[in-house]
Image (cartoon, rainbow, N blue to C red; front, side, top):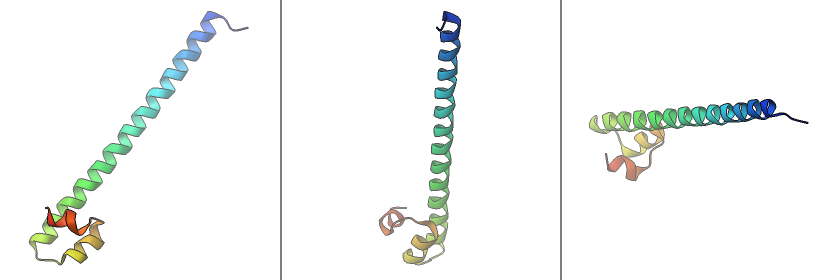
Amino acid sequence: MENNNDKFWMAITDEEGFLEARYYKGMEKGRAEGKDEANRENARKMKSLGMPTEVIAQVTGLTATEIDSL
């Protein structure tokens, strides 16, 4: 039978696991956003150099519509 102390520590462990999962999810999201912004910046530079949209799309993974809007 669990006592109150065991329940307390189980709740703390669950909370720590939840917070850790949220932290890593946030880090993952931040990396993805950073990668997306880097791709957009590279596309802007390539576009300013007169590179064809098709080539920019292949290199960055952006769509032609996304590139045209830069």
